[in-house]
Image 1 (tube, rainbow, N blue to C red):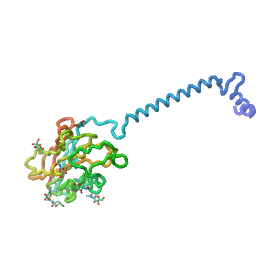
Image 2 (cartoon, rainbow, N blue to C red):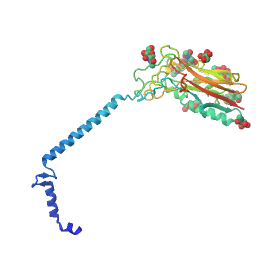
Image 3 (cartoon, rainbow, N blue to C red):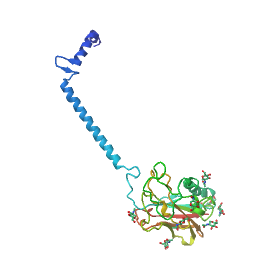
Image 4 (spheres, rainbow, N blue to C red):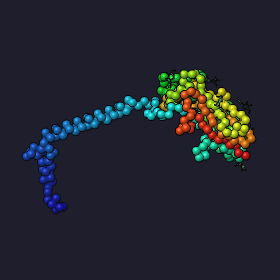
Length: 289
Ligand SMILES: *[C@@H]1O[C@H](CO)[C@@H](O)[C@H](O)[C@H]1NC(C)=O
Ligand SMILES: *[C@@H]1O[C@H](CO)[C@@H](O)[C@H](O)[C@H]1NC(C)=O
Ligand SMILES: *[C@@H]1O[C@H](CO)[C@@H](O)[C@H](O)[C@H]1NC(C)=O
Ligand SMILES: *[C@@H]1O[C@H](CO)[C@@H](O)[C@H](O)[C@H]1NC(C)=O
Ligand SMILES: *[C@@H]1O[C@H](CO)[C@@H](O)[C@H](O)[C@H]1NC(C)=O
Ligand SMILES: *[C@@H]1O[C@H](CO)[C@@H](O)[C@H](O)[C@H]1NC(C)=O
Ligand SMILES: *[C@@H]1O[C@H](CO)[C@@H](O)[C@H](O)[C@H]1NC(C)=O
Ligand SMILES: *[C@@H]1O[C@H](CO)[C@@H](O)[C@H](O)[C@H]1NC(C)=O
């Protein structure tokens, strides 16, 4: 092979190449007749034009139907879920159990609440606005800086004796523990729409009545003020915080009870057995010795 190749001089090679470029015998240019080249070029031009067109159409359709300020898939669940903090689970149930004579066990509970309330620090909340209470805060335009909407202030101090400010143990150093109840966000949801009444929290004792001496709510009227609704989404309201209601239980006797805290509003469901956290949360509270 090698010897055969060496026999061909450079001149011959150039001649071969020249024939490939323009073969006068067959009238082909680079192996194809000019006519064929025109056809093949037209074919590719048409092919790419169509592909580009389809691609642009797909992107345009996507962009047109996507509004960045609303989620692509709104949860079909139209009634909000309710959560209790600290969220300590034992198997399927929420069990808030702590040992009043064990500092580590108390700290575990209070540290959780301290961390949870970081975003509600009064200093942090200064960047949110003081809203008119008792009314929905409807914002049709993006009036806040950087094309956003305003968010209402919810300060830690609004949780009074459960704010952790006066008592950093949140009552877990004794038999008067605090829990914090939060209702999940649903974009554009208006609780009690049409009534002008704020939804409120109602905690009832399911078992262990004699072990609960009193229930205190903070804010004292136990309401989730209307000004925190509607929520417009993370992009529109980057500094939004969920309103909270804290509940302080005065435990006596056996110091344990099963409690249900329900958010009362005519358009918040709570009886769906397949959605145990819809509109309410059930938990056990135990202060061990
Ligand atoms: C609570 O903590 C104390 C002190 O650490 C301990 O003696 C006691 O057994 C604990 N109680 C329970 C129910 O775990
Ligand atoms: C709130 O934030 C300020 C400033 O960051 C800080 O000094 C203060 O300790 C915080 N308060 C609480 C209760 O965490
Ligand atoms: C916000 O409202 C509260 C209660 O009405 C008032 O005490 C406070 O001074 C207001 N803060 C600002 C910054 O306007
Ligand atoms: C908060 O606790 C103090 C005593 O620790 C009590 O005097 C006060 O009434 C409580 N505040 C509320 C709103 O319950
Ligand atoms: C728990 O701590 C608070 C604040 O530090 C204090 O006022 C209260 O007396 C303590 N309670 C018990 C039972 O130690
Ligand atoms: C709230 O009520 C108004 C009229 O009162 C109605 O137009 C609107 O659709 C309702 N919104 C929701 C989310 O139910
Ligand atoms: C809480 O619910 C119970 C039982 O449904 C009811 O008897 C009570 O009046 C309610 N309390 C409030 C403040 O809504
Ligand atoms: C509930 O209490 C908060 C704080 O004390 C107050 O701003 C709000 O207006 C009250 N809401 C109702 C419906 O009474």
